[in-house]
Amino acid sequence: MKNISLLGATGSIGTQTLDVIRTHPDKFRLVALSVGKNIELARKIISEFNPELVSVQSKEDYDQLKLELGAATKISYGEDGLVEVAVYEKSDILVNAVLGSVGLFPTLQAIKAHKVIAIANKETLVTAGHLVMEEAKRQQVLLLPVDSEHSAIFQCLQGEHDKDIERLIITASGGSFRDKKREELVGVTVKDALSHPNWSMGAKITIDSATMMNKGLEVIEAHWLFNLPFEKIDVLQHRESIIHSMVEFQDGSVKAQLGTPDMRVPIQYALSYPNRITLTSSERLDLAKIGMLHFEPMDLDRFYALKLSYEAGKIGGTMPTVLNAANEVAVGAFLNERISFLQIDQLVEKALEKHNVIKHPDLDTIRSVDLETREYINSLL
Ligand code: NDP
Ligand code: MG
Image (cartoon, rainbow, N blue to C red; front, side, top):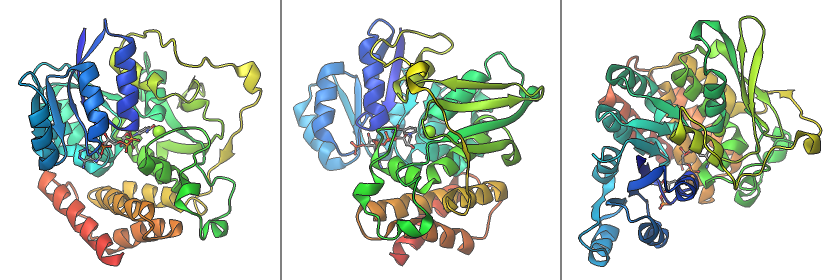
């Protein structure tokens, strides 16, 4: 039996994690969780799973829930609450499925508390991958990828040696606008951008998929998780999202992981690792029915956010922190219909151009650069 702490229980990854836990009551038990503002859903989750600790985002919701719940459930809130859930003493694994760089500090604290971490929260690795990986190495803590591409690479690397890796090939569906030229993106709506062809995900990552920033964040995420230079990380457009990513080895052999687009597979693999367990409700892959798989090179001028990500990643230091923070604010502004779709990349580029990189930033530096970037983008809106 593994005890699980879950950050972001009400989100897309969070609810799919609950689904995995629900189908294996003999293997997993939810002991602590955090939610943001969706208190309606939080109430349902609490009554079904009976966690010992619950954290909410605001003080108001905390006061309300404290009145409703008995003494058996401990309640907490804010960033301190996220940390309490992340380090909860009875938990063996932390699933970090919160959205954004707010996940960084709880992740670092969980590593210090020697929790195994199943990480979906890619913004944390983009904003300060060096701090997370250094701490994980120091504490000898296992970091298990949940992002489907990184889970695929991690699965391909089982039984292999790092020295044999020639390159990683991260696949990209292309997002909602993959068949549109850049000039055709003028005036696209939030609703258009939110209709992803293959995956059902949270709003922010669906927009990131449409701009291709998601793939940029994933390239930086892969750089940290697999300790490889950017020159060895390629992106390939693959519209069916059946091959979740590949690894090429020095003998020219390429390994791929395939499956239907279902996030419960990589979530469950991280939870059951190093074992595999059944996932009965998942649709099985039927390649005869699919017939053909397609691959195209990525056009970095068309998918400008991917180009910006490679550039920021190669410069390193605080550049990826700026990339991520600017993007989080810009995507929020697009979702609130305050800016147009193409302005997302433009704002991110402006923030990168304005920033003087700081090499080897510590946590305080990361936090202040993150905040300054958010303020700068907000001042431009
Ligand atoms: P969602 O927006 O669906 O969920 C985000 C979760 O985080 C919710 O539980 C939300 O709470 C909570 N949350 C958001 N902001 C805060 C905050 N400031 N403080 C506390 N809690 C907060 O996102 P996804 O599940 O789509 O994505 C989560 C992470 O996983 C992201 O980093 C994403 O990139 C990554 N990921 C997602 C994939 C997917 O298929 N969805 C695939 C691969 C990676 P509430 O809703 O209650 O307000
Ligand atoms: Mg992904």
